[in-house]
Length: 317
Image (tube, rainbow, N blue to C red; front, side, top):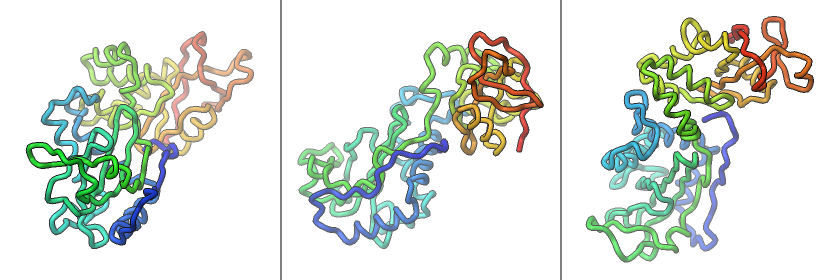
């Protein structure tokens, strides 16, 4: 995740919950293993990123996927959740959690999980996420006949009716998914970044155009489209040294970089994240600007009218 507090609502019981000891036990085990939802969020983020495979394809949007690929996301979520929590295989469903058989269902549309006949009567772990909205939700519900719509598809799969959707016990609802920052850039910026043939130049342009934003390793990999993609960020030939003469610093997950980000009012990079910003040597017109000392001199966030000037090399501790 990106270091920000996730917006979560945990263990929301439906008002008319009739009581289900097995569901209670599964709830307790999941929340004990992941009280703040960070592990679920990571598994969902990995699933989306695996499907996009940006490092090898340069893709970062859902509409860039083939129809057959989109259908595979549910399987990836199921696999990555099991790997993250080390859930045992269920007797007839996907997982065994607290000695209960639990089936994992993912849908791109909240509430539209497809439930097969063999899952009737079983607990469902229902998952939804939107990369565009940077949001995800996970809940539990028992697939009872009265909670399912009467119609079904040709595989006899049914969806939850209004009562079924109301019966979902939300473990995490409206939680924050690590942002796919490329979705936040303008089409002009995206075209400019990907217009370069050189992976290094694409990464340079990314840090120039996406200043003051958290940039994940996955985003760097998608833009670089090279095996050693993080090398494109570092000093000794990467963007840190290439952009240094222009006053651009690229903060990483170092403690000293976190202090610099806090002092300047920038987002603090989390694990595997980078934040770029253009700095200027402090001058009289920067009277009220937050500043940091680098190389024995005070530096501030550059204003548009500040000239470009080389910034000192940052410590890597």
